[in-house]
Image 1 (spheres, one colour):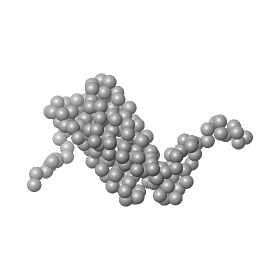
Image 2: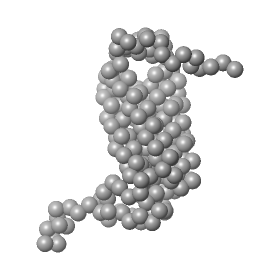
Image 3: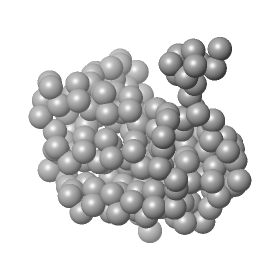
Image 4: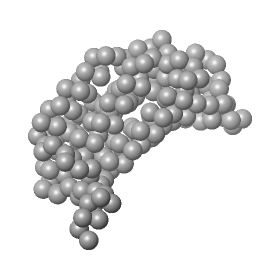
Amino acid sequence: MNFRLSKIYTRKGDNGTTGMANGSRVSKDSLHMQAIGEVDELNSLLGVVINKKPADEIKENLITIQHDLFNLGGQLAMPDYEKINAARIDWLETTLDQMNAQLEPLKEFILPGGTESASFCHLARATCRRVERVMVSLNNEEKINSHLIAYINRLSDWLFVASRLINKISGEAEVYWKSERIMNKQE
């Protein structure tokens, strides 16, 4: 059996650069590396959500998303490598619609929170939005596959709905945002 990583450190990055899949070296603070790093952080945070034991269906979907995010990071490192495509976005939309069908329609914004799993899922959603912002900046600098940004945009919606469903399954009530307009009516 061959090993992908036989040695963890190489010392090649000690000068502030890192190797890309095509053999080139880029600055570790380049938008390209920031996008890859943000995707890695999001994927790690999904590991925390999974660790907090959401319902099995959500857990299995989160594991699938982790694989997608690994592929997305690979696609950022190797633009000719295409794993994130319209079919992966369709899958996100289908599973999002299935989860959302189990929830009451929102009449007001909700505050992030609830169970530990849902709270971490909300944090993953906010992190996902940061990933999207960095990827948009990268796309403005050098064009990337449009499916990557669309996937991340849809994923933030998916994580929002998953947070709500985790709370519902756990019997945790949602906390609605009390807008100034509502608070003024209560006074």
